Image 1: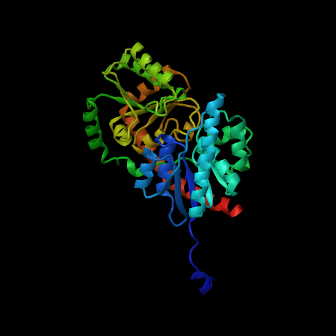
Image 2: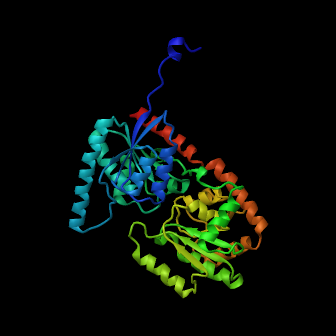
Image 3: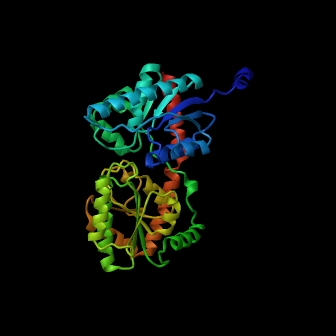
Length: 399
């Protein structure tokens, strides 16, 4: 039985966690961070964020009433050029000095680095302050010596999927260092089953897509491993049988690092004869829920996908997925129940799976409903936030 003195004791104060993002633009990693910060339980976590000043991410955090501390963080790039390397090292120490002031002023207890670049800064700050740090691992690129050092220095490497966890283990990261916290999404952004018909008509009218044209959508940054050219090739094959089918490609070279791949996509569309009547290309968008409502099928052709955030978003919108079976996608898609998985790199198989669902609307709709239920059960961002809050408490307690 709890004594009166014990029951009247004040609740523990929330942990003060400082989140670091080296990117001020809003890609998938930044959207995931923003939604988690909005969902963190305020009684357990007081969230602060150091982000580049005057960027979209800083503005999003400010609107969400997160404590924002503008710091000139930057993305670090691998280079052997001595002047570029020196500039990056200088920027690292300048950012570290600013972050230490934030820590001292606000009594920060834990550092959470959202990406590899942020982890570099967090490592230096942790070394100087003694604070524990978490490194959020969001990709499956080769770690290299520096990546392995970061993972070993971090209190935990937070993997966004089982696939990322296995990737880290293969690179020598001890299992005890790895904590899997699967990405979640803000379900409230997506139209309900009742709202979707109206949203569909409105979005299609805006896009100039006929109401009865099957619409396939592919969303993702223009980086080579996303394999958008496979989507184009599959679309061209599908249109040979059903010329009324339209495609929608949404994304861009957001971080200006893949101009060559962007040109390749443009050339491939021309060579395949995919004009504006077949393929509509849109840049980075904030109205993804509306675009998903307008579409019939998400096509996800990437290789070695760490998670597949847009797959979860499609499921939340009540839409099935045709995806290549690589990386963490199998953790979201139940093959034959919420979508179809095909061999990576096979445009013909991708096209056939799409045709199977285009030609069977009843099956497609049933898969979409199963997808909606699965995403709501397993991929709600509040589940992600609660798991992270528990991890923060554990790590600070260990310290």
